[in-house]
Length: 101
Image (tube, rainbow, N blue to C red; front, side, top):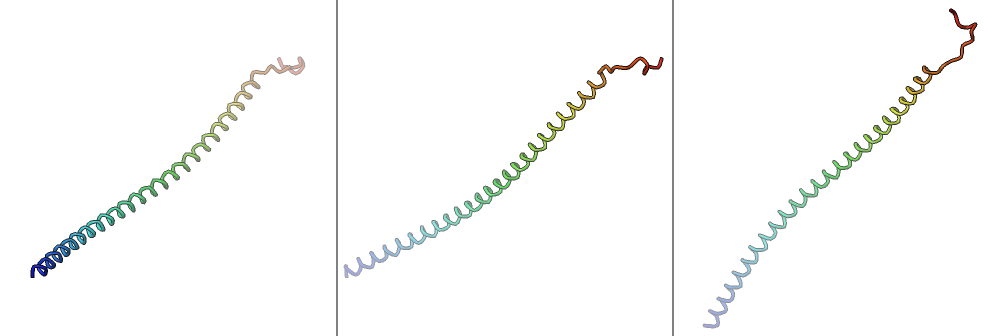
């Protein structure tokens, strides 16, 4: 009889351990699910930032091209303006008979 009581007590202990382990497994599964959800959110955020970085890089590249074009245009205009100024200051030879007095 004592053996039967001891066996029942062992089985009850084993059942409690199984239930505790099942509870722990359920908690861990919940934590895993939460971590997976958080990871998915972080990955989505990272993807959004990557897209934003690519967009900003494209804008920067475009701005740099526009700036270089503007500098070239500005330099060209400065050269043309200087040529115009120099041509206005040039002394041109005039023959006496070409001058009307």
